[in-house]
Length: 267
Image (cartoon, rainbow, N blue to C red; front, side, top):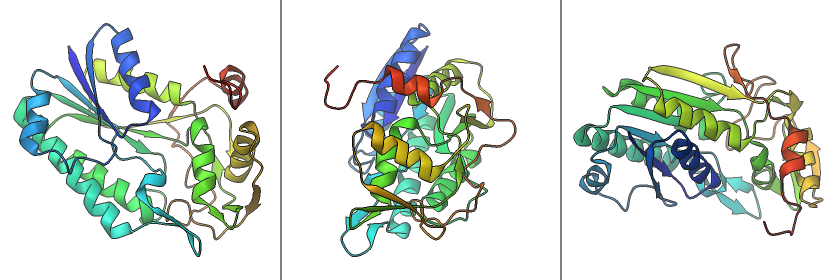
């Protein structure tokens, strides 16, 4: 079986492709850091011919979805984000249908359907709705925050070198565990629905960000503010937690940290 992985140039695409290959399947990785606007639907269809499964990692919360400003910190153009993610998702789904792809696996974020439909959650909700209306069998994998994302979350919440983070609960997970689940899902029998994945430990987001910055020898001050947005959305205390049926990965933050390269050391 041949699997196509579309990503935005981040680590998750490479890791997922490697796990697909470890399952004994052929895989191609396509990186589109600026999205799919530079591709025609026909071009995408051509590269997908012969593929049975597409893993869609294109639309993820990151600094790429907004602008860092001195006056207001991280700012998202919500309308533009919703339009662009919907446009890319529609183009990819249409190309899959034309190419004969039989299964679509899309990465999303835990909190869709629970957090207020604003900012990144509004864009994710619109994207998920398009997948759910597609005739192609699909599974949406919603992940909690990944261990590797702490510094990016901090930067999105930084104003004048102070990090403002809402006091909400999270269950962060290792990127490797998310990639393993995506690969396993892609090469298994197709099913339609939503699957969530989370890490084994619950922690407050501000404590997680503080630990992540310290792990990178980066000591911006982290302050807790209930009104601080998370990628354009104000959150309730449990909005980022997974549902009760989530798959709980085994890797703890301590185990992940012990296995990562030290800051400044090339590996």
